[in-house]
Image (cartoon, rainbow, N blue to C red; front, side, top):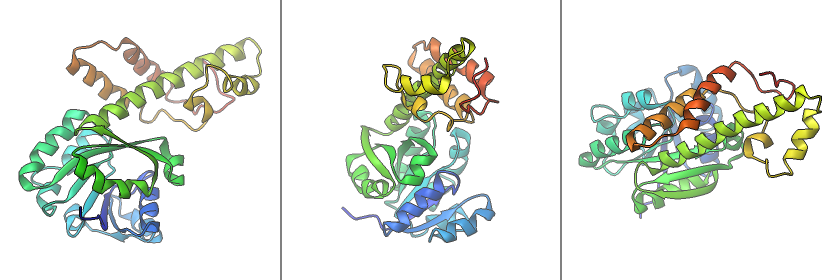
Length: 272
């Protein structure tokens, strides 16, 4: 198994930058590309190189981590006429984006004749975990490809789970997001109710963390935003339609998240 030495990163934003920094500190040669050239200085400060285009980034990269938005952004970047054409034979394209499982599977099919490996490698636990290098990584794909990628992801992840074939990491991330947004809404409503009845919600929150109501979002209350809720839940609803099952709570939560999105979820904001 040939070890990965040079890693390209497309997307040097909130998640991409700390991931780049961790990989550099672990001895990987890292180059980055972002559509915002202003990110170049930040990337240089992390010790990574800069590529002027995805095509330039693909040259010499053993693996390319794609940290862009959702389906449309990913499909616009990774195609047989784009990144897949420019990548060398044997290159691994690891998709950290949150997309429909079918999207990654179709890209993997398009990459196969070019001898490029497209896999999905979603992460959970958010920006603070990215900063600390303690992300949870779901890796999906051929066992040999996952084995090659594991040392790369171990540089910024505390836990790594091989979920199965291509697309299953997206399923794992969808399950994670479904539960996370449901917990956020439940926490908000519980604390709003308590406040209306005169309960000290800060003290109540500490008590709930010791009870059966404990959950990750409650432990990190005040750190969550609604920026990605609608996109996440849209993907989950599409997956449910494709699978022929109903997820009524997901549909309701999507509507509620739209209502709650303007709020910052500080501990003193529990209005409903």
